[in-house]
Image 1 (cartoon, one colour):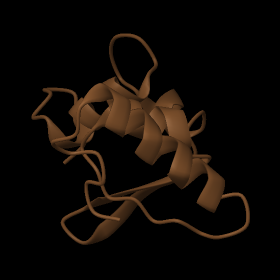
Image 2 (cartoon, rainbow, N blue to C red):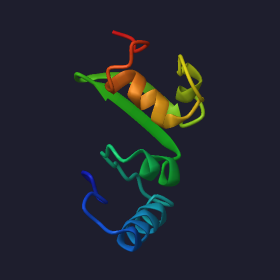
Image 3 (cartoon, rainbow, N blue to C red):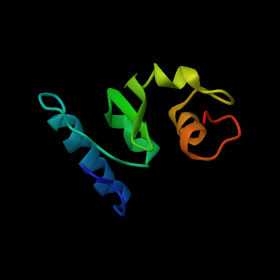
Length: 90
């Protein structure tokens, strides 16, 4: 699913996240999104891709240990890799 909650109101976002969680119990569901709260709430495993290369793969807890500054949370990891943070790896 590509950006499944983009443009939805809060109630609709919850419905889509629950649907995705339920589908993921016995199927692989691939979600592409920039909405970090969606990733944190529905995903067991994450894959981060930058310029066609796999840069992170694992449970949310594993990659966030690589956050260089600030609180160890997924949003800071995202900014580190994609947001132009001065600490981002090249």
